[in-house]
Image (cartoon, rainbow, N blue to C red; front, side, top):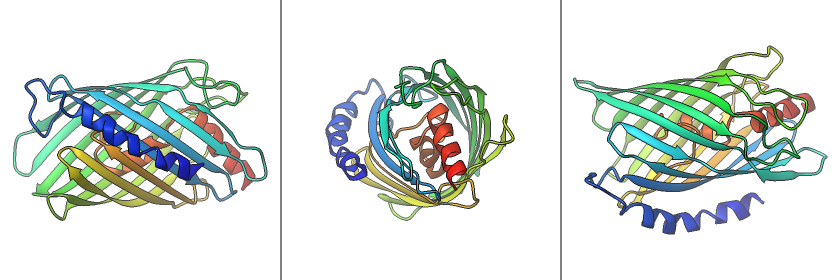
Length: 283
């Protein structure tokens, strides 16, 4: 199943080709309309595996405002049990970002995420209510081609899934670094950690990852991220691959840093929580 979804990355090349020319007084490096596709696999210590295929469509009417949506398909394969799949809830995002003048360069960003309950409810992948989250981020570039990035995310309200488990509101932190080795290739590293949650019995996921971004042609890029869990509640390993001019995620803040992409490829909310809890109980 994972290989079939990875093969679906090919149509994103055509999708991005149509999206990239949609410019209205935008620079060559900042198209107004962008699109992309990401596929990911997450495997827990219990043997449970989670696979995700996620798209992204973003509209940037100005240099500081981004509006987007990221439809997602999910497949969960419990250890020793029957796999189930379905369409996930639809995240819609609004984000603002602002570079601050000075040397070294700084930038600030904030994003609001609304998760619309359109997913499959019969197998607990979808939810019954709208979920809300807020992301804040800051970037720091001490020199050309080198970037530090820090972010904090907070679930403001969770939705109740199709089963008996309520979504947990998490506060998560991310720290990332990117080094441009050439005009086409950028190496990345990241740390991501759930710092607090509304239910003390819920898992705290913490991962470390590395990856790279390769510019293929014009705005079209290939992006690969891998990660390992650093505590018992975390997945054993994660892998995500994306292609396009935009990348799947639930927040427009930090979509170009590896930690945020790695986290948002697999989503937040009822489906992610249930998979994490099942993995923890099975371990």
